[in-house]
Image 1 (cartoon, rainbow, N blue to C red):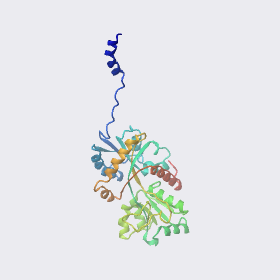
Image 2: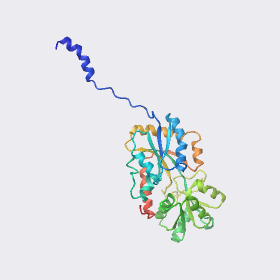
Image 3: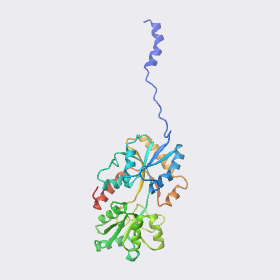
Image 4: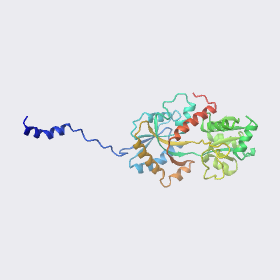
Length: 322
């Protein structure tokens, strides 16, 4: 080959062997986002998702489609998200049942609550309160604990069912204060609280929204809240963790999850967008009207701590996984 011909062909050869230019990733999102609610439409978690949905759509500039996949105590919908592509376009609004409680009361789950998901942001929590029948004369958590210690098994507490949040929370409390009380399970929160009012049961536990009217009417006595902080509507009501049981904290919460293996930068971008959506005017008031608090927070290590806490609570309640 002559020098002239070599020089003529060199640029073409170099061009042929140059690596292709990198494909720039498109900013998230560039298409609709699917938000799976692992419960039927019309329930409390569905209400939270549909309250957040329009605000997320505004922030992201793309439709956010709520997809109800109920069944199996929230596990069917959760499992579907765990198997999705970790690109941020399939999300789950999971919570204390799907990612903590179930692990303590169900022997075989179709996913691992910690290993098979990427927690993106905690969105909300639900304040829970312990209440008592007015005839007991018990007004504080210290008095309640002292009474149950003095008369083991003679006091009773209602719950919305075996293995429910109210059952596991009360059982965990009893275990930690070395007290005993009779558990009376019901098939729902409403009847469980009605029987506390009727003096069929001594104590009960439910969300603030359910018991607030009865407390204000004088048909129930508020003993304590079970969360980390005092409730805005009951500023004089102590938490269980203040004096009676330092560090005690158990209440339902919700986290937006994606499948495991999501890119860290994508997760940060999504968390910032969700947090911005949670700050939308009127959203906090709307959710509070349903007894839900807007509590956006980094979910790690909370989700691990909660998983361990509720599995331990199931053990404290002597619940045999089925």
